[in-house]
Amino acid sequence: MINNHESAKSPIIERDTNHTPPRTFRSFFIGRPLSTADAPHQTIGKAVGLAVFASDALSSTAYATQEILGVIAAAGTIAYGYLFPISIAIITLLAIVTISYEQTIHAYPGGGGAYIVARDNLGELPAQTAGAALLTDYILTVSVSVSSDVAQIISAYPDLFEYRVWIAVAAVFLIMLINLRGVKESGTAFAIPTYFFVVVMVFTVGYGLFRFFTGSLGMVIDPPHFEAHHVISVITPFILLHAFANGTTALTGVEAISNGITAFKEPRSKNAGITLIWMSVILGALFLGLSFLTGEVQAVFSEEETVISQLARTIFDGRGVLYYMLISGTTVILIMAANTAFADFPRLGALHAGDGFLPRQLTYRGSRLVYSRGIMTLAVIASFLIIIFQASVTRLIPLYAIGVFLSFTLSQAGMARRWWKIGHLQAGEEIVEPGSVLKFEKGWQYRMVINGFGAVCTAIVMVVFAVTKFKEGAWVVLILTPILVTIFFSIHHHYKNVANNLSLDNFGAIPPHQTRHRIIIPISGVHQGSLAALRYARMLSDDVTAVHVAIEPAEAEKVKKKWELWGEGTRMVMLNSPYRLFLEPLLEYITEISERRQPGETLTIVLSTERTYSLTKRECSVEHSLFV
Image (cartoon, rainbow, N blue to C red; front, side, top):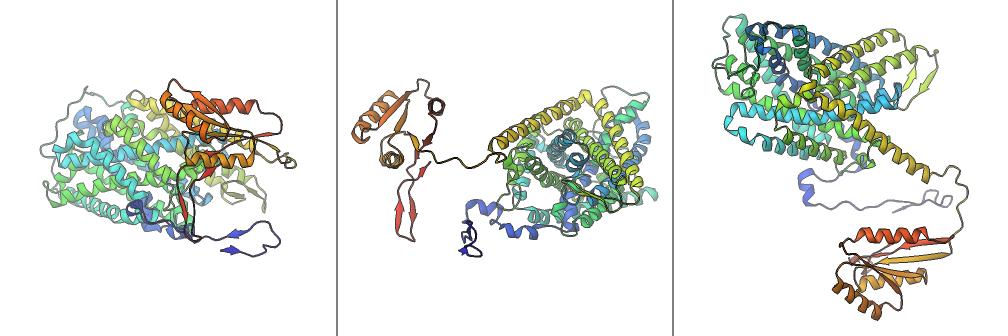
């Protein structure tokens, strides 16, 4: 329907269409297509937001304590005395990072996290570095979380060990499918399992502490076999730093809420900030409780049975109903952790693509108002890593946390820089930046100190992690990040060149219409479609050339004879292709003709297809579709 509002004054006519996408087999899996107007109704509240964005951080309680133990376990029973103090140091760092990101959420309500903060305050190179680190981290989040999830299943059902890789890949694609249904639906689907994990884990830790203080909590019965590659007689500072770095994987996912603020209902910043606080409190309490109990029951580091499994069967006196409830809840939350990456990776990819550093296709929303191409890209890459590393958490962890702490550092350094700029503004003065508006605020010194101190702490952790895990695979990320940044700038350079070539700046008046047309018609055979294209081409110009790529001599001879009969005297160029290539010889010919064009000559390519389109309303049909 045409909108006639001011149509007499403007050459632009607005027209509403009543066409709706048809229901297809695809709709059965991901749901009916949503209108753009439905976008505001696809936002989520704090309760669902905790399930969507906090599950990554909460899930780290399933393996963070185990990874600390994996470093110090070779020291024997004295290692358990260091487990809880290391955990306290990690929780202190969690508090610092949480306070910093809470400030980021209110300063940048449009989301984007470390990428946007670094872009506005530190420059393009730090921004792309932060983005590359986060995108890498989200891929590894899926790989690590799903692999750890499968490890929990194998702890309960050891016979499935040889199928662990394919179970993990199947889980990744199941999460992908659910996320393609949209943020609101995936959040609702995952909310109940996430809260089930929280309740069961809180009960387990609480009951375990109760048994400890009443003196009824014993040691792990029949622990799995552990054989250290080398015995540690003294726990050195380097070993402690190594264990601390492993345990900081508990902080992965803290930045997720700041990246996904736009998914929350209004007031977005307030809801996202409250959700961040909830998440940090739950994470800190569970992590400390599990580390304390692990030391008391003297659980053993093992690839065959997780620390969570050993802890649960010790607290609940065997593999009863409560044991399987905890294993089930832990399995589910590890899948939810991957879901956090599926929520944030497409958004961050869209921000990069919108700025011209990734392919523009990542900015397109799918039928369910999510960045479906980003979701599918994440699933494919994460599955590839799972297959390469055989779903081993221990082999994937060294690749994991460097990117997280690099983004933490750049984000907090950027926030410190932002507070410094705010402190040098006059009252009433403001600066509009792409991600936020800067106005003078009292107490900027206090906030700058918080962010600056947080940047120093996370930078130290990043360096420690890189050094202690370098030989175990951290070098891969240290090489991969600069490569990704180089790729980002290469893509950006390409888009800038295209934009400059198409820019209307200094373009002047539209040039006069060209008077000479030269037409080329690529044809595969002589039939009604190619003859219709010929008739259309002759309406445009008398200078028409048909082009046939000759792959099979016998077929080429048939085309020649038919063209002599039906071609109406139009010249034909036969491109002999001895290597049976079609596209390359055709493009080479068109390029040659284009380079030899005369001034004022327009080269037009007419393609023919044999599809039939029906216009039932007017009871007529178009037998062939022509593209110029």
